[in-house]
Amino acid sequence: MSLLHAVLGFVAIQPMTGYELGKAFSTTAAHFWPADQSQLYRTLHRAEADGLVESTTVEQATRPDRRLYTLLEPGREALEAWLASPLEPDTSREPFLLRLFFAASLGTAGVIELLDQRRSSAVELLTTLDSLSASAPPQLSKATLAAQLQYGTLESGRAHARAEITWLDELRSQLADHKESAR
Amino acid sequence: MSLLHAVLGFVAIQPMTGYELGKAFSTTAAHFWPADQSQLYRTLHRAEADGLVESTTVEQATRPDRRLYTLLEPGREALEAWLASPLEPDTSREPFLLRLFFAASLGTAGVIELLDQRRSSAVELLTTLDSLSASAPPQLSKATLAAQLQYGTLESGRAHARAEITWLDELRSQLADHKESAR
DNA sequence: TCTGAATATAGGACAAGTCCTATATCACGT
DNA sequence: ACGTGATATAGGACTTGTCCTATATTCAGA
Image (cartoon, rainbow over all chains, first blue to last red; front, side):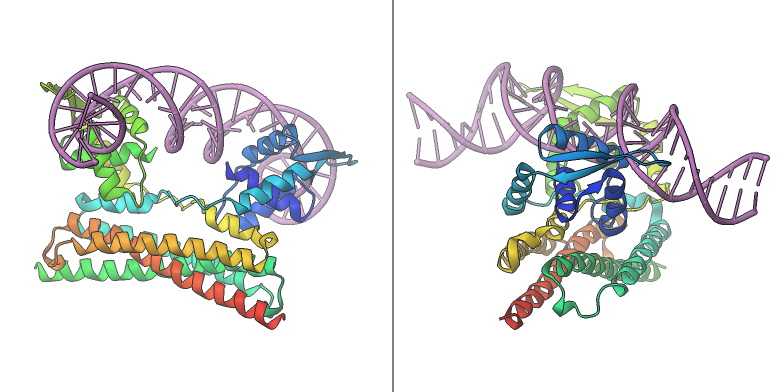
């Protein structure tokens, strides 16, 4: 249940509404933590019921009312406890690798197509991250710790995207050679 | 629901029991597709109910009976359809990045500790993958396509683990420098 | 003028996965 | 002798996330 922690993390920086949180996720955190809009609001409700955050309704003339969420002390404690808790081992699912693992029946040509598809999404991702990265403060060494860490997550995405592309290219050429030599 | 496809993929290679599938996942596929034992059996039941696989009970004297699952034609079609379907964009969650993103309140020293923890799990993973990789056939260029692809998923894991370590080291030294210069 | 996107929140139905427990027997080590 | 792990399957309870729909208004563009 880490969406809760992400929500607490954002609200700790600044009180926010559910809508703003959605924006924050889809811009800053999209590449490592997709957040479903519906789930977001449900998480906020639950966090409030659990006394972690508090909401005040901000009436608006033309738009629907906004509910501004503020972090409460128990919420801050939960956030800190999460940050300090031991890292659990990564158990991530990689749908692409799953597919590749079983893709032999597509034949060499089919697999190469699959690799090329994957390659172009990786390039696309890298381009997106590059442009986000370009809009970061140039004086990183003088930035706050928070800014450095947020930039760091971007760098992580870039590093992995580059690694993915390199790996794909190697595998591709290996398969192509094999096909060649099998003539 | 990709566990189903993974199950079909394994059963396509060779008829298997749920128990054997569990083994297959935890040895070959553990690093990209963790499979819960309970979920595995449920998936098998459902696949059989849907006419994708067929099971025959193999009675055993001392051990509990085994149910051997065989791929049926509709199952093979489902598998091929999945392999040929367009790749959906990756929406993976990265709990570590989420934590790092909000970790500023731990302070530079605390963050460095976090990075070090992460680094040692990455090194551990890399070591595991390296030893798996070492037991692969040396004549890779002569291997079957299936073997090449399966080896490829291992290589992917290694490439990403190395990228992770490099990135962690860079971030770590950047934070350390910053701390240094802030004295 | 009409359509769609943005602003803002919310619920229902469902899918998928996790964790724990149950059952039963045998082999192996201490 | 005694517990632990391997073999083998299965269900219950629960959590989390996804997808779709609803509601209500305003503004920009075709």
